[in-house]
Figure 1 (cartoon, rainbow, N blue to C red):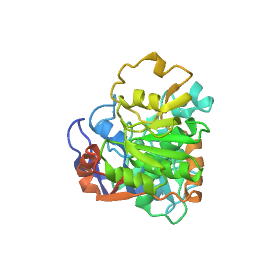
Figure 2 (figure 1 turned 120 degrees about the vertical axis):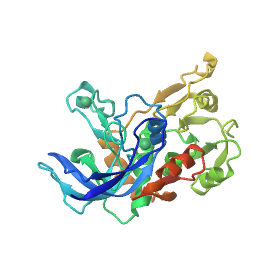
Figure 3 (figure 1 turned 90 degrees about the horizontal axis):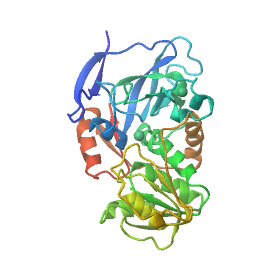
Amino acid sequence: MASMRAMVLERPGTPLIVRERPVPAPEAGEILVEVAACGVCRTDLHVVDGELPDPKLPIVPGHEIVGRVAAIGANVEGLAPGDRVGVPWLGHTCGVCAYCKGGRENLCDAPLFTGYTRDGGYATHAIADAQFCFPLPGATGDAETAPLLCAGLIGWRSYRMTGEGRSLGLYGFGAAAHILAQVAAGQRRRVYAFTRAGDLAAQSLAKSLGAVWAGGSEEEPPELLDAAIIFAPVGALVPLALKAVKKGGRVVCGGIHMSDIPTFPYRDLWEERQIVSVANLTREDAREFLALAPQAGIRTTVTRYPLAQANAALADLRQGRIQGAAVLIP
Ligand SMILES: [Zn+2]
Ligand SMILES: [Zn+2]
């Protein structure tokens, strides 16, 4: 029987381990994907570090998968062997709960998440629900495309939540912000990039991607913002961002996990400022963004790691040593 390789988390807080397994066969409604590239997302760090409840264990992390269909199960329509597809974080939804029926499948009561509650893409092969995969035509590289599948999609959902304002702050200039800055600048918004204090590399990347200003998170931007998105998992940024937005401004928290938010005076929230969070994505978000990204000329900055170096990639992400996005190549 053919075998595959995967980087497996057996217990949160321990390094991933290389495992050889038989290549699984897709069941009805599923496809087998031969992975060409898989992005490394901060959410993977939260899974590995045990900051998210109840992962499937052992689990293969990774939810920014670009690959080619290697086999299809029964009742799969619209996909054929050889097609290039993307597999995102939202791996399955129930289809019958009030959220699914109300067009908010991102909040489904019984979802499966790729690389968290079903095996993901830190592997040579992955099984996916065909209805939650997206064809990826076009000529962009596999590695360059991978970060679109989460940093891009969740970033896009966060961006849409900011409304129509012209001045936008991005706190945490990692994979998602480096994509969103290009989208926002392309729509003639003024982008203000906030990084860790002294992270000149991230600040210079931000400016090269269209930010009109870049500085440390503690700094005040030169104008009050219409909205801000916080991508860094740092609760202390919430009161800082609230102070940076104008009356009626909105602070969008784009991550799945954050350290606790410190207390702050009510006056910083008053005047109809809002704090909202973004959870997961809908397939509609994915279709919309994956169509928009090539038109908008989005170019990702990626650092490639061999699959076997997944632990090193995670460590580099944790330490803030990556500009743009890290991508694993099997
Ligand atoms: Zn549901
Ligand atoms: Zn992600």
